[in-house]
Length: 566
Image (cartoon, rainbow, N blue to C red):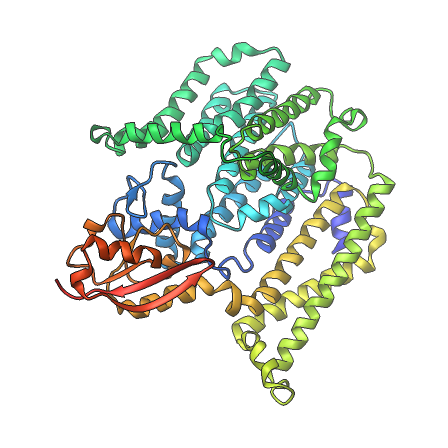
């Protein structure tokens, strides 16, 4: 295997199909294993529950969150989740998170497969793997949040524009119209902030090449019109402006922007922590980013394209400063810069004549430490699962057998066996052929495969062991509530988008005011602290409320009541 990889990078044998196959394997190894094992968390539920409401009510125009129309974000992320539920035929964690994973694949596919005179195929392959293996990419890409899809759309628009701009034949129609289609979709995700990340690249490159007149061409204005058409088709036509919703949405967005600059609830420590989080998202490749300013490294870039690299470098730094200087900014707000950063890093590494001796030694030592460790862990879990399957531990200790019960499932043992074999074979190949590991390209690909091994071990060894105790707590609550309401509608009173509500079947209706508790409400869930308030309001005092279930999440206690007829 290593011989083939080495020959692939040292000759002209690297083809788009081969490069894409490598990228596809790394993507599948990192982003698919265990995607549906962990329960939905709070932020994810804020994206998922409006999608559930869309499917239940048939209203795909305006998202609804906890009983109110939701205007803080456009609805595209909810459309994607609802579509994923419909296509998969189930409302599951895997289906909910699938859009983020698909958009990661979409970005790296465009990056690798799109012909480019600016970036060599080797550079594009390295950029794709660097992006997929960064901590921030894995953290955002394996959960359903706006940021992963948003960043990937930003990256697609950026790489398309850079490739069209740097082509030997400049097609201004492609230069402006194709990125505008992508940006229009991005506007439906999180509003106009995507234009900051895109246009700082455009302006930096155009100014550096003294071609500002390109911005005045009719193709550019046609692209702007196309973006606006895509966005306003929802904002003003689908969203019923005659009912005042568009004005409400605009006001909500202005408040959201104002909150980013509000420093009342943010101290210096919290702000510094968030900036540090934005920086650490580039781990483990963070140590290589300072080489963007290494004159010797940059001089190895083709002189025809060096200005573009330097302009992109500025377009990376400026929005990072602009976004993170806002007191209310969070680490994930900088995520759209990841695509540009790793495009540049892959580009820079690909043009270096050879790897630094010190960097190569450190990199190899890390690989040779992690791979045998992961291989040993995987083989240990395989042995434990096999012994447990044949009831070896039952004679030793019933407690141990109970602890290992999740590993007895055939659906768990099979992936443990397959992943253990793959990890062990890969680790043996790398350690046994260590002399063949040379050059940045080879090390980046092996690093990508190593990260995939780590994710496989996490998904198939760690998560199955903790699933009953930790990862499925919210789903157990949801199933218990479903059992208590016995197929009836569960009404909630002043409960935010709690993740356990995702697991309640059948429907969940959100009530915000006491007067909304009508005679058709039989099962009512509220925080225990609000129970006295409800009694004082008189809406349930004559309904003989009976407590049927009580539970506590962190410091908040919830109470499910069954109300009698009026």
